[in-house]
Amino acid sequence: MKLVKSAGKDYPIVDDPRNVVCLFDCLIMTEKTDPFGGYDREDFQLEGIDCILVKPKTAAAGNPWIWRARFWGAWPVTELALLEKGFHVAYIDVADLFGSPKAITRFDLLYKYLTTERCFSAKPALMGFSRGGLIIYNWAAKNTDKVSCLYADAPVLDVKSWPGGKGKGPGNPDSWGKCLQAYEMTEELMMQWDGNPMDHIDTLVKAGIPVIHVCGDRDEPVPFDENSEPFIKAYRQRGGVAELIVKEGVGHHPHCLEDPAPMVEFILKYTVG
Image 1 (cartoon, rainbow, N blue to C red):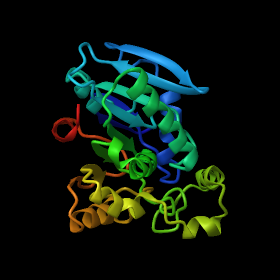
Image 2: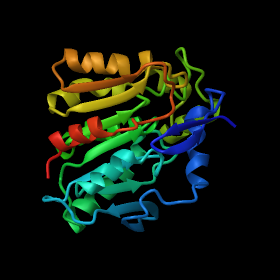
Image 3: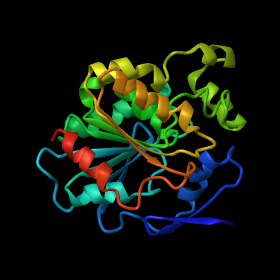
Image 4: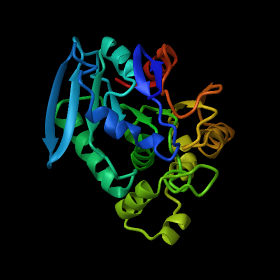
């Protein structure tokens, strides 16, 4: 098995780009160590849905938090840096929901719980890797007053691109079937649907939500020129605050950067405590 080193750890490379976006499902399940082992971790459920909360040693003023969507524990350098700054790290399971209304309902559950029962900041920073981009953008578009900023890493921004594979990427037939099931749509209806993150740019720009993307320009399963490149270009053209870090010659993996300082500084700049 080929390995790539990122943030001090070795991660496997999947040669078939149809499967690379699904790697994390196996990776996280077989992870032997807790990347947040130095911090208190609370596992709980909301209406039967698994949730995770990692607590900083000392919470910063206003109880800021970073909300991780999908692939818990993979490339955690940004969360670890924010924990040191007094942020909580939160997660709720939205596996195989692809940013659908069902996923949004789950996000609503965690948001309500943390902001009312735990007195967390009303405006968390949202963070999504790969398909996690679908839920953070779809939820933010429906809750523009509840978001401080978004950090998306090699994000899927249109289900037609992935898992649909209707553009230049190979897609993933199994995940495409699950996506259609999650949305309760036929393929014909999904091809006409206008609720992808790419369709939310005007709403997010009008709300003044800043975004930062980190992407490889050789991403095969989630093509850069079908996702982040046109998204960031349009976001800027419409007057939005959008930063883009492009990793030249890099594919879908590894995510993040060896030094997460650019993402951390961006989140600290815009997060409302």
